[in-house]
Length: 447
Image (cartoon, rainbow, N blue to C red; front, side, top):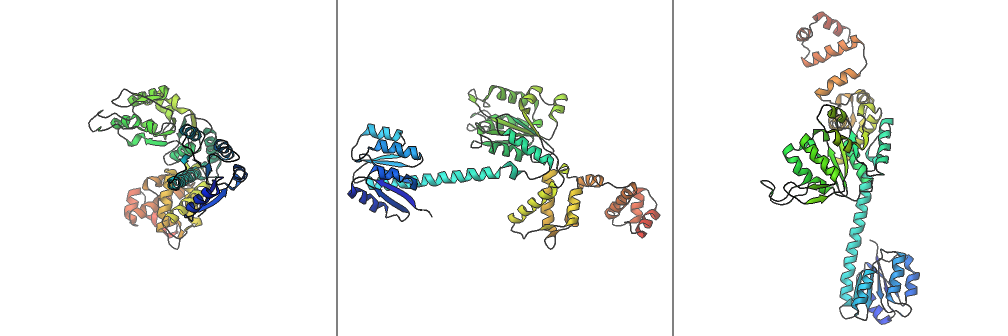
């Protein structure tokens, strides 16, 4: 652990030695003493963690030295120690940036000891906050968060980069599972609002009668069970970003109230009269075509223009080419690491299947398929037979492969033979074909 470096500046050698002796009782403290201001100022490049400063030095007064220290580095804590009890001077020095002001008496050593503990705690918390901010920024770095090298995804990354430079509202569209919330977080945590809250709400997940209070909050007694005031998501996101997922699912009556809040930049909680000012950037997402919803009368046209702002359309996974394998590798490594499993590889046969599959569930489905395959596989290598797709997806997989009509016939017969445990009579009846057709294909090894 690094030493906590303390400069003691006092032109009284005896008093300086007392402070040095007392503080040196903590082995974590590294003490350096100076008898005048000039020597202290000349050695500020040593980056002390704290300076205790006698107010009445022979070559300068405390106010002048404090100004020079703060000019060099305003983050260095400075504790003034004075032989005189002058309240006006103390107040002025505290306003000018001094951390504390102590009178030289029998209690000074203890006061200084406790002050240093508080300063160290504050410095530790500050470093932790800075670390978390940096970690959060890296976590939501768009280039690292959204994996892919395809032209389609590179276009999305460029749009995200443009969107973070302003506070314009953003509307994200794309099929379910394409990563709309990840994009919303990437926009927020790379924008000027990154130090402010990010709040999210899924319009489709909350019953309509509860959605208003979830969005705008409510006052105590607004309805049965409202035992205390509660802030809504808008207030939670104030000065930051609010992500409204599945915006197309919002009821028309609530759309009117949302439009008013966006226009007026203020809200009134359910059951209240107080107007709460808002400064919120809104990012919306939907898997539907909002313009079509407007034409159908399901979505207000004026609200549509308010929230569209900067549009970002996410491509489906099937249009991202080799990104599928890149994502599969990333998801596989992540799953193995989280579950302390040995590294698993993907065979060429499995890669061919992944590249030929339609992925109606997009990245979310790929994650599910890869995680299950990593558990099912043998010898730490995923084979084609380890990949399991949902029954609803089999039609897509079947149609995306380019085959001749005869090849499709064979595939259909193979599917029904598997379904009916190779009961040729049953399959012939179901498909309304002759049994000899199936026997012939079996004899030719085509099934």
